[in-house]
Length: 211
Image 1 (tube, rainbow, N blue to C red):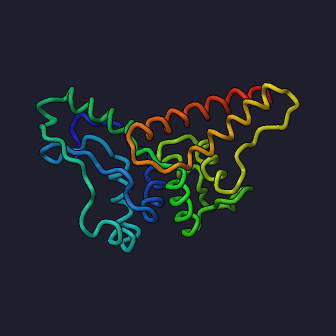
Image 2 (image 1 turned 60 degrees about the horizontal axis):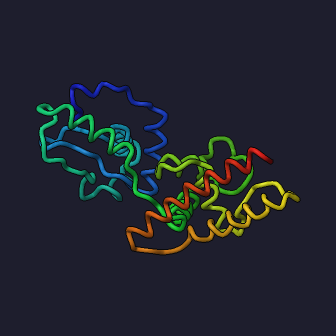
């Protein structure tokens, strides 16, 4: 149940979109609750799951036959509102860091469920893979598009140029993008890959300004 202090209104469009993606992919991030089961973070996710149960019981039972995944915090939110707010902020910022390969796997599942993935405008009423994945995994739509393009040999949408320095930067950018497909279990290397991702985004933004 929600905390009395949690009075933020739910965005129904966001709830609807989450419910549709959860029907295909399941719940990506657990709901966070305190020791008495009071909601700390995940109000939209919880509302989406309730909506799914109401409108698509088959998908609900497929993903939640053993219950809704939750993350328990061993404290009473009514006794420590400051900690509750801190956890709420942390949970809403914290997302699993999906690799490009994992994002492409999620995209395949969404596409198989009827989501629009190819270039060009989606048909009226058809949902798109890019914005949905951006919402789910917490990465910019530009990053999602780059992840999906990297599997198709299309690493850059930058305009061609005769500038020597820019060409060198673009070559370095392509090399960095190839590194994103590297598989590693090392925490240090995963952190390095995350830093590389941030560097790629910055380089793309700067090069786009010059296009």
